[in-house]
Image (cartoon, rainbow, N blue to C red; front, side):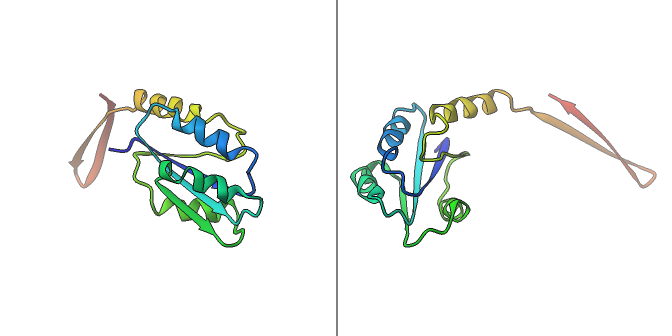
Length: 129
């Protein structure tokens, strides 16, 4: 099962996209990589095609539709239990995605909900397990 889906919206990021892909490939987690090129005109698509065998889904917008539209295009193909959005400009370190998944996994609460109907009213108890 895919643990983490990473959606990368890309627009004219030829200077950083290759470095980003290499960093993501080094993340030791079962992942799905979805990249949405949002109408780049700077040669970004050439770099993406070079790494196509490592990209699970490559979506190319013919014109720039914006980051939100790029994310929506990628969402249709998500298979992972967790989803991370990684900007292509390397503002955030993609290795942090694994840390976030591990933190989320370690801090999941198991909850036990008890419902009791008395005189037409519902009484509930929410307990951490």
